[in-house]
Amino acid sequence: MAHVNEKINFVYDAMGYDKFNKYLGVLLTDRGPEFNDYQGIEFDIDGVRRCRLFYCDSGQSTQKPFVERINREIRRYVFKGQSVENLTQDDCNLIASYINNMTLDGLGNRTPYEFAKRFLGEEILEKLNIKYIKPNDLVVKNIDLIKHELKKSK
Image (tube, rainbow, N blue to C red; front, side, top):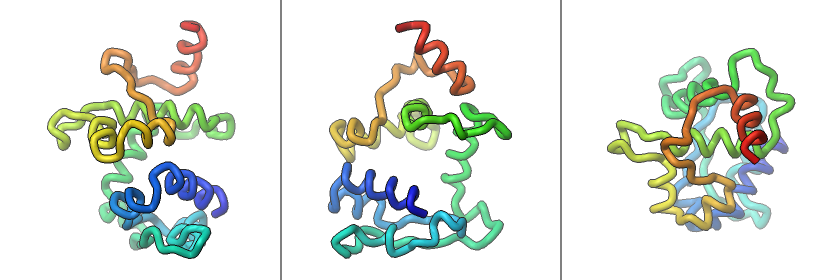
């Protein structure tokens, strides 16, 4: 729970109240124990409501299909059964950057990064550690291989 609240606070601090409330004003999640502290998620440290948290019904992945799509994308970089114990925040930022720079049919063959940049601004994306990656540099492979190749190119 503390880790989830820490990350929500990180995003909130990067975006500020107005943008956080406008774009993340409703959060939909499963009933995992990491989301039990709904007050820590819904309210900032000053007690101001920044969003509303709703829970899906158990076993109803169709209630959050976009989350399920992202989970599938993450599995392209972190294989099922692969330990995440050694993943760093930098690794997670790199995976998020890769996923957010893939074109999507539903976005008119644009990327989530392009939309986020348009609505949030590049400064917020930088604060969130989401980087632009050129389309030709996007290669779907395990995160360990990506890190290895990055080290070789330096």
